[in-house]
Each structure stands twice: as C-alpha cells, then as structure tokens.
Amino acid sequence: MSDTVPSPSPAPAGYGACDCGPTGRRKGGALDRVLRGLGAVAEHARSAEQMASRRGLLQGLDPRIKVAGLGALVLSATLTHRLEILGALFVLACALALASRIPLWRLARQVWIGVGLFSGALALPALFLVPGAPLVAGLPVSGPGLVSAAFLLGRAETAASFAVLLVLTTPWPHVLKALRSLRVPVALVAILGMTHRYIFLLLESAAEMVEARRARLLGPLPPKAERRLVVGAVGALLLRSLDLAGEVHLAMVARGYRGEVRLIDEFRIRPRDWLALACALAVPVAILWGQA
Amino acid sequence: MTDVYDLEALRFTYRDTTALDGLTLGIRAGERVALLGPNGSGKSTLLRLMCALSFATGGTARAFGAPLTEAQFADPARNHAFRRRVGLVFQSPDVQLFNPTVFDEIAFGPLQMGWTAEETRARVEEALAAHDLGPLRDRPPHRLSGGEKKRVALASVLVTGPEVLLLDEPTAALDPANRDALVHRLGSPELAGKTIVTATHELDIVPAIADRAVVMVAGKVIADGRPADLLADHDLLRRAGLTHVHRHTHDGREHAHHHVHALDPGAHGHGARGHGGHGHGANVGHGEHQPDRFNHDGHGK
Image 1 (tube, rainbow over the protein chains, first blue to last red):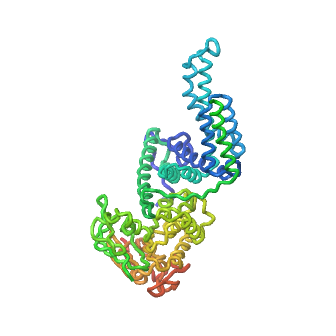
Image 2: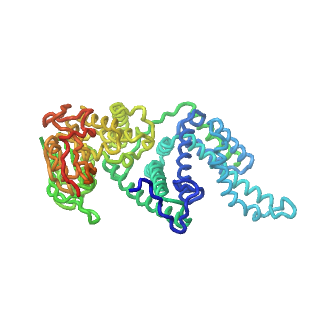
Image 3: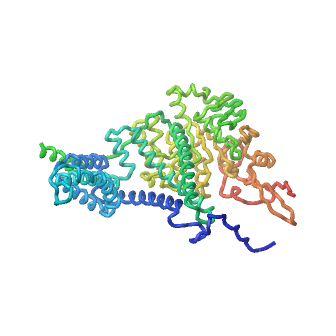
C-alpha cells in the first residue's frame, strides 16, 4: 500500500483549480460576496451595540424621551418651509452625534450617502420640471426646482440622521421597550423584537451554510453554479426559518403565551430627561408658530 | 403519590412518520424520570405531548387526572392552569430565548401568567440571583455562551415554580464544566419534590438526575426501572442503541466492542433519592474504559 496521499482526481471541465488557496477562496465569487455581506451586517450590528453603550449625551437619556424627542425633531424637519431652519436642524443632528460620541463618518457612511443617492434620484426631476426662471442661461434648471430638490434632499437626510441617532445611541431592547411605553401596539413591538433576535441566528446559519459549501469545493465554480448554490442556500434558510418560527411559537405557548405579549417597563424619567424632551418639543412648536 | 401523567397506548404520527407507537407510561408526583433512547426514538415528541404542545393521534393521555386533548386546551382557563404547573426546557436554547434581554426572558413567563409587574420583578430578581445570572441581567440572550443560555432557559421556566419540569436533552452541546453545573442544579434543593422528566441519551448523567429510567426505541417503551438496573443491562442498552461501538482491527480482523459510557451505578452515592445509592460525582464515567464495562461481541469479518 502506498503511503503517499493520492492526488485528487482532475477537476471536470469548467471547474478549474483555484488560484488562491486550498479553501477555494476567491475574491468576487457569489459565495464570497454573500459571506462578506453577512459578516459586514454582523459587524455593523456589533459596532452599533458598542456605540449605544458608550457614555454620551443621547446615551444618557431615558429611551422614551429619546424616541419622543427625536421623533419631534423628525417632525420638525418635515414641517419646516425654510431651508435655513432645515439646515439648522441638520447641524443640530451633527452636534448631537458628536456630543454622543458618534463619528460623523459613521453617519455619512450609514445615512448620508445612501439617502443622498436615493432621494437625489427622486429629486432630480424637480430640478427640470418645476417651472421658474433658469438659474444659468442655457441650463434647464430653475431656481424653484433647485429649492424643491434641496428641500426633499434636506428633509430626507435630516430625518434619517435623527432616526439613526436614536438607533445608534439606544440598545435595541430599550428602543423596543420605549416604543411599548409610548403605546405602540404590543404585537408590532414583539415582531420587531423577534426579528432582531432571530435575524442574527439566521445570519449565523447562513454564514455557516455558505462556509460549509465553500469548504467542500475544490476550486472556484462557474458564476452560474455559484449563483445556484446561493439560491439553494437561501431556500434552505427559508425552510429553516419557518421551522424556527414554529418552534419559537411552541416555546412561547409553553410559557403561557395566549396571543398577547405582556412586557414589563423599567425606566425612570429624571429632570434632565424632561428638560431634553421640552427642548425637542419646542422645535416643532416654534416652527409651526413661526409659519402661522 | 398521585399520578401526574397517565399515558395509555399513545400514538403520534406526522408526515407519514410514526413518532410514538403505542407508548404506555405512568409518572407519579415527585418522580425523577430519565427518558433514554437514541435519536429518533420519540423522546422529544413525548415531552411535547406531555407539555400539551402537540396532541396524541391515538391512545389516551391524561395529566393531573384530566385529558390532554386539543379540545380541553381550547379552554383558556384549563390551558392557563396547566401552563402554570408544567414547564418545558427545549433542547435548543436559541428556540426558547426570544426576548431582548435576560431580564425580559425570565419575566416573560410570569407576565404571561398574569402576575403583576411587582411580583414579576421580585421573582425575576430572585431567579437571577439563584442561577448566578445577575451580571447578565441586561444582556441580549443571543450574545451569551452556550452554558449561559442553558442557565437562562432553565431559569425562565423555573421562575413560575412549575410542579413538573420537562427537560429535552439539557446537557446537549455543553462543555464538561457547564454540564456538571447543570446536573448539579437539577439535584439542587430548589427542585426537590418536583416531578422531573429528562430526555437524554447521555447515560453517565442518569444516576444523578433520575430515580427511574425509561428506555424508548421507535416510539415504544422497551424497559422501565431503576437506573442502576437498566444501566447494568448491557444487552438492553445495546438493543436501544445507547452504547458506543469501538472498532479496531487486530491480526487483520475487525473487532467491535460495545462500550457503555457509565460507571457502575452502585458505586457512587451522591444524594440520590429513592432507589439506593446511585448518584453522581466528578468521576461518573467520563470515558473510563474499564474492562468490565466492555461488552465484547460482534467480531467482524
């Protein structure tokens, strides 16, 4: 008997030897992209949790006050009809972020770029379609069109910044409890909570499935085969999530769940929380009063 | 002792699979029963039926003297009363831990039972202290280690003080230290007097957690008795697929040794209740391959 390890069989046509190591790792493959994406989501969630546990202005406030106060600021951004007020609100969002030790690059990466591109695409037609005198001779961009586009973009960016500040400065369980305290329907809060809870479990499952498949590959697959593997993994994950949903429901029933989730609130509002809420509520009131 | 469960010729089928096939079993109050059997023997299904999460497709099942039927559990009062008395710890803590924090997880059961916020808070704080979970109070359960998750899962069921505790593979996927801690917890005074039914195929923990063992194969009970007697019956354990098979070749022939992963049950006397002197200790059979525990047979080719 030979004591040498036999060579593997030659790969079938189209399944070339990998040029980047025995694990079949290849930049740009569908499996790798999925795996990197899953890793990025998990990493993103972890860093958001770390930010929420830092000491900072918003982190120190009662979550209910934050939900109500930042909600009031979002409302302010949608109510105002003056660009300078919108600009001031945007600057306020940046100031709150810095006071809460949230780097502005984080807001830029997480909010401003994506929202800017999306709402920019929506605002683009306004530049040309809103009637008015052209800003520059020969260019079909009107002044009122530019203002309309700026409002749309500014409102979207400002409102999204406040919303993300809430999420980045509040542990998710506290956001949920705050929503419950503010009388958001309990079923919705429970669904949000479980989605957050199980999304990570499913992410882990998905990452393991992709890793397991990649570990059994001798080399890179053709793109079509890779896509088929990813689609298969998505299907398997869906089945797994359905099973999981059934099991979780049984676990809830076993502990007395009868269709209505009951939760317990543990927050205490301090004077500084009331002060913060008063300041936040004053903004939309002042805007409405000014516009009236 | 009064009967807690009275199961007669129980059948359960789903998707053309027969999980329980004419199973008959009675369990009395205060008994500590180990359900032994290989994977697919119907242990988990039986626990779910005992917790009224599924209902038998044949035979009769009674708990606390009342029938365990879907019609009975359509009555909210009956359902509520039963849930207060019976708790099930699932095999996978990931299934059971669905709340945002450990505190909320433990508070879930009491709140669903209609306890007041004050009562719930007090009991949850007690449970956190009793299970050494204080430092994890505000942590999301999905960030915990496997052992911590199991502790939280157990605490979340015990907090309502059920009379009957059903455990599905409680030591699965635990490292030795966490496994020993859990086994120790199951023998703690907090659980004294409770009826505890544990499904497992880890034989070495049986003497510590049970006074009675029930061996299941293919949805049927094939043996029922004292753990000491059943664990000593190598033929039974081999038939039930509860032995390790060590294979090796010697002189060009393949040999198979069936190995029981448990020490002589009579040799250890840690606080066992009821049937004489079998208990657990740090030296309960973790792979001690003593010749008298080998049951040689099956010489291959």
